Length: 163
View 1 (cartoon, one colour):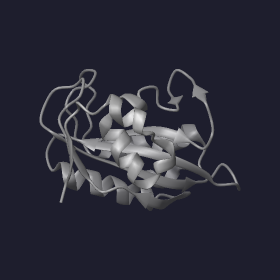
View 2: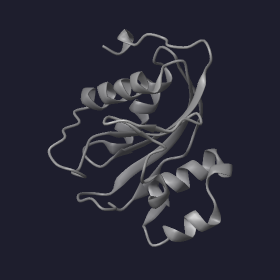
View 3: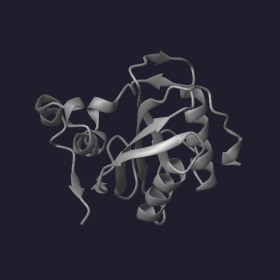
View 4: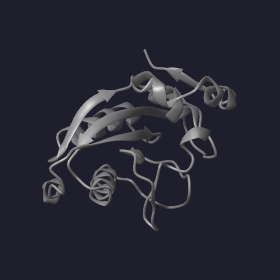
């Protein structure tokens, strides 16, 4: 199913994807998603953060396992989003309600320097700066994108590195 995505460009774009899970084998789901994204046609893994455990923020359920990856892609943003949605679905993602617990959640945080505001996709992700579970892993792999002021604003959110 994942092989249906066609390459859209000869020029690669750097994208950042936040990954989270709080149902089932969360570590396994996150690691498998990283592997599936990095081996998809037109996507190359450049860097990945370590795994973090975070309390739900504006959500319910068990603790989340989170990571952020940096990829180089030849897919356009819409096709990368569709790939991410297919991976979520293959891992049993249900969309029963907003911020419900999930086996896998993949969010496109940045797509190059693009600003996208469509009904399906908003990039940069509109809430990336409000979430410690995005900022801390992102700082690990792209420190130039995360300021101390951003981190100060989310310091009350519980998040810890998984050893």
